[in-house]
Image (cartoon, rainbow, N blue to C red):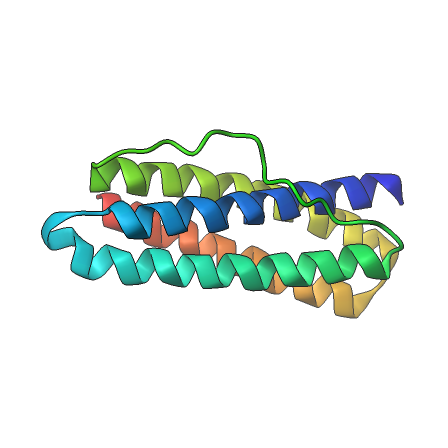
Length: 137
């Protein structure tokens, strides 16, 4: 159980980091790209918050305590919208990797409800990866 709780806390840390990063980028994107990217980044904030709530509830369900600190990777300030998207892509790829690992662990538990919740998050992260890739190209 310790392994799955640790992996879920890693996912929670990624979501807490994403909330901060996307809020920062939504506030700092400039120029003509602001009209399209501010709503995108704000949507990612809301999505990350929703994911964090699901993960936190799963941790508690399994008898654990959710982390309150974000993932320690630095949030890089930039005025370049391309760099913002590249950092966003990197974050989404990292989150996708962690959720894939969580899914494998949850599957072994045999809790279908929990599996479905994490599978939904995993597919959401994969969609975000592809969205960021398309915006960068």
